View 1 (cartoon, one colour):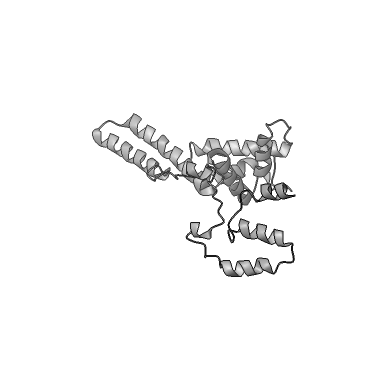
View 2 (view 1 turned 30 degrees about the vertical axis):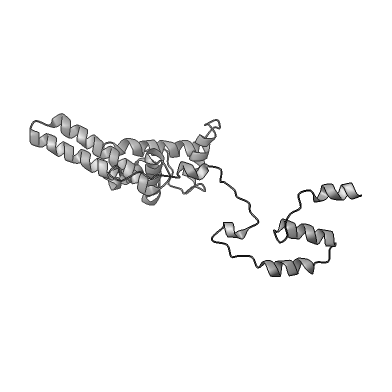
Length: 213
């Protein structure tokens, strides 16, 4: 028996999955419109068929006939179902990988249950090995960001560029000339030169000035 007629293309076509994801993210608190309820029903229909039917084309055709939708929309629903039920990071390639992994495990279970000889069990182990590779379990895991990257960096402050091999040496003579040409008080020039290491620092200079005043 055919479901509700939905052959007419909806204004929501192409964004149903985004609406569904947003609905779940919000805690399923809002009431879904009838069109979205039917869309979710179609995804569940596809998921149920996927466990028993091996051919995507057969599933798409059956969905098209059951819900009276054209095959282009049915194909879109099938892709959405693969994404919705089997996807972790919203990448279609991973969606298919997860779906095939589950299908291979089902085949392996069936092979083990029906096995009667050692050769039958070997065939089941081959299926399991294929599932292992499909899932990518034979590949090294992404190491991710090392813990050291989150450590607070050590900052080193120095007026002497010789402390850093990758920095060019300062031309102290030119720097002194530049300070002398600045339109500031002589006492300020002396202070800048001392801070830049162009002249020796006087640790008790401020104390002596106060004493003499």
